[in-house]
Image 1 (cartoon, rainbow over the protein chains, first blue to last red):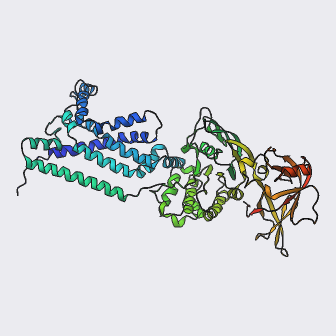
Image 2: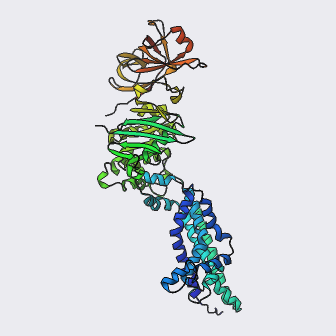
Image 3: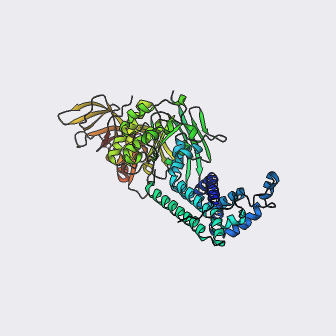
Length: 227
Length: 365
């Protein structure tokens, strides 16, 4: 059987987008999740709700506002255009920006609950042994929260890989720049190239299944550690 | 010269108050004793820097930890902490746990090193193991070692034995005494166990409802008519030091010298000249005003004077009497007896001691 030729570029763009998004998210989501897990502030619930918004909003709504925000006249796109000469909308950088917001809850929430279950005691203990907060975070808290990190990375990555609506709205469909797997699948179906659509879809399906299988297996094996 | 630890702390929360002013020698074991909710743990957390009292002044030797402008955070205070739970890091093996604080101590400040701590605390067989493979007592020894390896100026221990069974407790106490002997690290030790007090204490701080009720050497401050609430009915009584003066083989007794008077106890396997600590419950001390020569089976009768008479509770039937027998001794008698004997401060009395509890080996180098 001859396999139909498929364009691998969207796959590559998807992987890049997901990788970069998760990397940036880990940096920003960690302090947010830490704060959520330990603050007694009243605005905590507000922040929690905002972070969770992408879970319930239709991607088109998020995409629409992001399009405006990132466009040449938007609060973000305007200044960016002034500096770089082009707006963020319909660019890979814009896609990253959108994906960060869109995948935020999938990274923040596992970290939040991991930090909550680690609790305050390991931090206090490490500090009592002369560690600064940052030192204690890297040497004690994050190893103890590793299950949360694994879940956050995998869910963030897989979710970014699978996004469609926001990417279409913000990134358009520019081959080689913003055309990702999910959009490529849509395109193939539109032109009735079911074979290519099959390969890409099945690939994404199997990949997602394997990833989730791995998360659940590893999470079962990693002992829950209590101090 | 012994360093001084000064602590003035005031916390005014609706549900909790703390108002203390302490000056303690940073030497030996200072036991902070009191019922739960008396502020023991809060005092310790303020000393450590884990908590910041809204108004406070803390100073150890010449280093101010807290005043109006200053607040030295916990990781800069150089205090070691041992908690009720060992709080070992589960992802690190015992050696890495022990070295966690050591590695974060300036090389110039390191007075204690892994080898000696491992040796004194008997940790050598545990080093490559992980905390979840250790018994509670072993974990607690590692926690103590880990805190010591930061070469702390002060070791703060918050009920470190409370979660262990009696056997494990007995296993750890000698190690805590060794810390004092071998490393000269002053210890502040929070507990509400009289047993631990008797075995460890040099200086005693008694807290109740967020206030210091009494503070000083245990022999001097523990027999006080104001202590019933803070110490509790079961434990109220004198803590005295006595020296073994001889054995009476014929009757199976050991003679103790206490301030020139003699106490007889069941024969002890300990040599003449050694000191031991006795705890005499106030309810085991009865009083008579005339010498009971040959008319009683009670063997231990001390000559004393009435020093203070406790507050008479209108509804209560008993009253605490503080006696002076060279050191204070506490006696609980009925109000009726007080009235019958017509006791007044300064009056000579005979204290009949019906029972006492002994703790060996309080000698320290």
